Length: 117
Image (tube, rainbow, N blue to C red; front, side, top):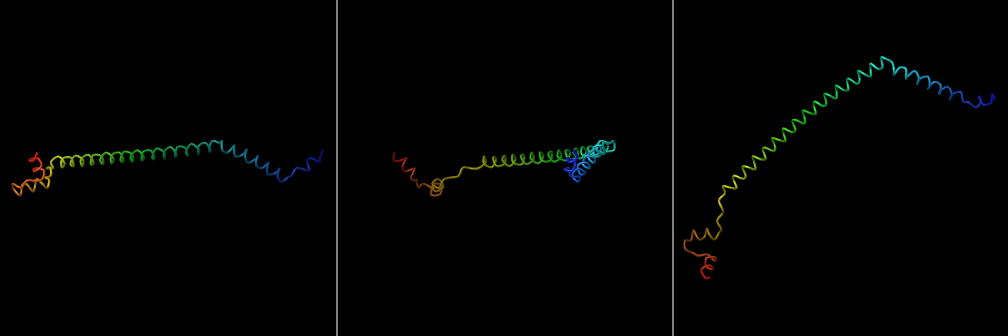
């Protein structure tokens, strides 16, 4: 019957006992009032940091929306100006029309073809 105790390694048994002891003491420490107060303060600090980050993110988003709206307005104004320039442009004269005006009575090929028909 004592032979089974000889097979137990005392070093391993001591380490196991120390682990159980520290685990039990650790649970007692972690569940104490001081530890709970520490956890509460840390959680409150994290919530304050979250609020600060969210406020900053909201400001950045608002600024980005303003920039986008202004850029869109600039592009619309530019497009409106381009439309005005296109509408006021005179149709260009063809080479044949310009030559007919400067030469006076010299008929062009198209005029000759239509007269022949």
